[in-house]
Amino acid sequence: MLPSWLTEPLWDQFAALLPERPVYDPDHPLSCHRPRISDRIVFEKMLQLLPFGCSYQAIADTTCSATTIRNRRDEWIRGGVFARFKQIVLESYDRIVGLALDEIAVDGSITKAPGGGEATGRSPVDRGKQGLKRSGMPDGYGIPLGRVLAGANRHDSPLLASTLDRLADLGPLPEHITVNLDAGYDCAPTRALLDERGLHGRIAHKGEKAPIQASRRWQVERTHAWQNAFQRLGRCYERRTTVIDAFFDLADTVITVRSMIRHAWTTRRWDERPNRRP
Image 1 (spheres, rainbow, N blue to C red):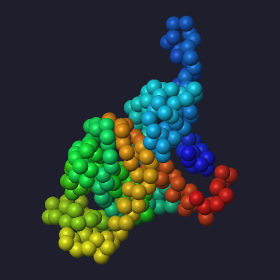
Image 2 (image 1 turned 180 degrees about the horizontal axis):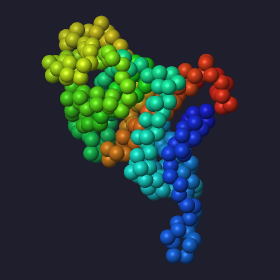
Image 3 (image 1 turned 135 degrees about the horizontal axis):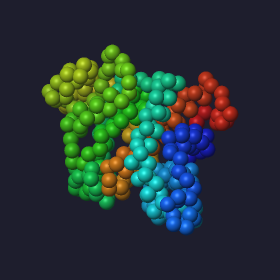
Image 4 (image 1 turned 135 degrees about the vertical axis):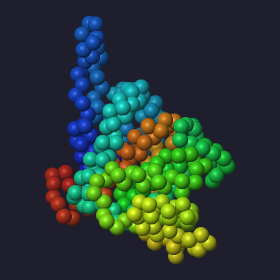
């Protein structure tokens, strides 16, 4: 379970994005029906699914059924709530702490996907079983900026262009941006792509040991570790790409808010401030 100093600010912002819904269905012929399950209850169930990674049936109880969680999840996805939620938190982090966009890193991470699905493929590191690859892009501190989902059998370098496209959602960018990449991107098409976009590439060379060439790539590795700590993402059973993206947006928001509170703890005071630095 996430601590209250983290869940409360998450819910306050998430609730502001939800449209108002009547407690009872106005189209019911008898003007009565079971009351609508509170959005707060469903949101807390979603936050529980992230670290536990269990099924909807396992997390359901007398307050909320598994069907209600899935239906409300899909309703929020159709409304773009998760994507907007992440965008607002990123903007808040940039305003309060500041995104380090002059040094970004891009790399892929393969996780298990036993149930298959739209964005899965045969994993080259897991005996050909179904796997999911995400091409992630954090800033210089490790705050996740965006991702691209693909099958585990896809190479990292062809996903670079669509991953860098996520920079367009971040508003004004620094004049000079350095993209840190590992040796898997050491090829002419990658350098041509970076030159075309006016980006400077710091790419590890094939055949040389990684610690010498790693430069500032460690942030993306740490961000992958943060995301994989959520069992829902480290072993994905969702089959639809839109649902996987929604859980990633929720996890990235948790990571960003947690980092923002950690930075602000020494410079600001507020009523719900944790007793010690998180």
